[in-house]
Image (cartoon, rainbow, N blue to C red):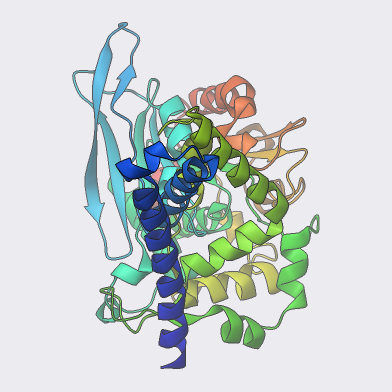
Length: 421
């Protein structure tokens, strides 16, 4: 009950602040106040508007907002997200471009489950749509999943990826961003060993912690500094009665957001203060830079407790992927079994979350893969976000990834694998 009480306490705090913002905005909008030449009235309305929007966005899943895409024929084609595989903890979504011939490049974009929704990769998806047949993993908020659906840890995540790859077929090109990189590597190795006919054609790992200890960061230091008991005691709560997942043990999204914000508290405080002044002067809009960023940044989702704890313990503390000792469903996965899937890693020189050296470690683990099927890129001056969604991604990394896919898409599978299949 204590864990449910603290969960509901955070939701009560969020709800109260949203109500305070709405109340301030409404009161300051009374026509009678227009006759009072007091700038504080306008400031109060602006504060209320920004506060209400801020706390409201924390429990709203953002829309993909991808309406159309301009194709090579020069026309704008409507984009329809369609669920092709539906599962309890996540779906496989196809961005169908209406009226456009099917693209030869079939891309599975693996979104992270690290507190934000898959829509965090919206700009990445938009950049790939004109040239690819795009599929995205759309993970669900744990608070909305009944406890009857059971657990979901990193082994289940890996099995989900395997199911998605099976559904798409062997001509798939996988792009994994950040957190899912090590599990995508494990899922591909598992398929390579047991079902080689289902493994993808290429795999691009972007800024993922394959070997977190290769280059220590604040994230890896935190993983080693705290004990699992401390994490479970301080981070894990149970979903309250308001949601369908009542009673499920989770790492709450609101608690994650508090951690995110505290890391750069001064910068966020300044951003909101400046936005209030812009609203006061009438310079803000629904789609200005502040709202576009924070509508996505503030939208957080709960992670299942077992997924969060197993990630910290098995990926960061024990380094099971880095040491090639990862076990799924009682089966030890051997990454060296990958002999037929071209693998490329992408890192940012200024990445302070998955620092250079952590992701490229994947190539060393692929002992059965010839060098001709390996690739790596270190983007100068790029941080974590920039390597998959910023200017560095659009101008430099995306063309390299598409070229890597094309160079390895026409090569025939090895005869040995064909026989095994």
